[in-house]
Image 1: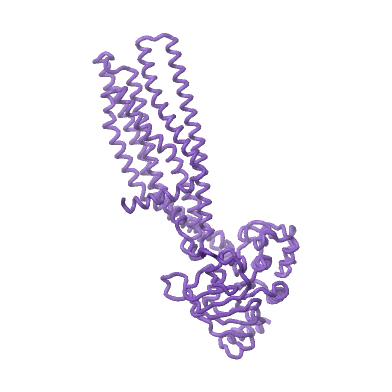
Image 2 (image 1 turned 90 degrees about the horizontal axis):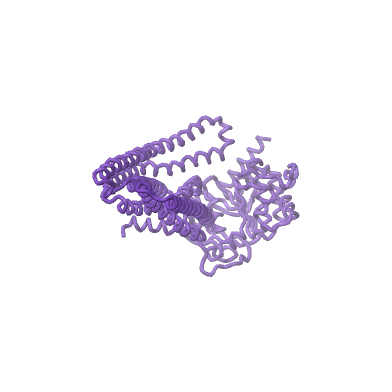
Length: 590
């Protein structure tokens, strides 16, 4: 077996795992399609006999009997086709539902390093356009891809039974049609394949524009964005036009073969009738041959369309299976620890880089030991590894060298859900979801009471502005929190983290959008509400961390010094320089 065949077998196996409870309607579709084809191929046979009987003279009762038989067969064929249509729709729609759920569920298991491999726009395309293409192909496979070959075989057999030597017309017509359809598909496929990669670009353009709408309008770049979108859409249009222009040749080739078959059957058949006076072939057989010829050619055309659709969806299948076959890089150990005792955090000679191929470490030789309940500040310039460091605590990434321990246990030994439930992170650009403010806060604790929510919001200094909204805590948050300010969003996210009552709270520059007075009140609330929780505060402002038990100064991914505010002012040049700049800046502003 070739490598390509093994890959295709793997794709099919991966995709068909999502059929599950829809196997029954899939099998029923196949059964009813077989019934429909057999009946359709048998009808011209009876019709031909009826035509010959009418020519030779037949009683009215015999004519009515044959007519009723034809009506019954037509109704049976219609019933089989209708039932097959219903079961096919149920099977294909159910399959795509399962496949989308499987892909989405797989994405939920991804670590940050897994997600880094796929762009968000690409994942959206795979969950929408690509799975829709696979759904269409599956629908064709269980219905048309079964119907067309069966129709082709049965019609040829019946054509030889009815027409004898006259059926040799298909020896000429069929190879011509097959060759034409294969060539059409061969030249159309490269254009179809390139379309899906361009869909990613189109979705990326839409996503960037929607997310950055305020920036676009702020810089009056609407025309530039429209042009960028137009170019992406135009590239897709060109590829589709090129492909569809080639596929459009299907129809004229089909018409050529159909009319050639009709002319050949009529001319040769009429000649045989006249010369043999109906002893070899008669009018009924000629009418049946025309019907069978149409069935044969139509089945071939449908097979060509299936071939085109399957080739199109092959690229989609690869992209979807790529998501399904990508295993999360961080998984639970065999016997995970299911309890975090306290908020102790230990970085034991930790070094970390985002990929094995990366030349530089994001953080290097970190040896920090934080006691439960301590408040720790982290200061450093942009790109010094502050966020990289704290993302190792809830095991969003795994360390490259050394170990990170929480509660005296290596984070790799914990059950992932247990560990992450004990750690709350509030980012500078945290995400709010569509729903009410109350629903967003309950992400921290789904069972939180209204009183607990209000208490958390008061500590996060969010209660006042929430109550100022007409609907208060039931105010609907638009996608991404577009209808609240940056500072309001940060405070809602802090309340969401507080209600979780975590053993470790990480604030990654999460008060950058609030004023210093509000920032101070939030930190004061931490002391009273979560005194036993370890608080790690990443900040650009010295005022946000100067009351911390320990302040860690990072530079170039390494710890250059640590201590309290007074100690660092005396001995750390970097800390003192930042402090003096901020103090002088404040004085000038004043």
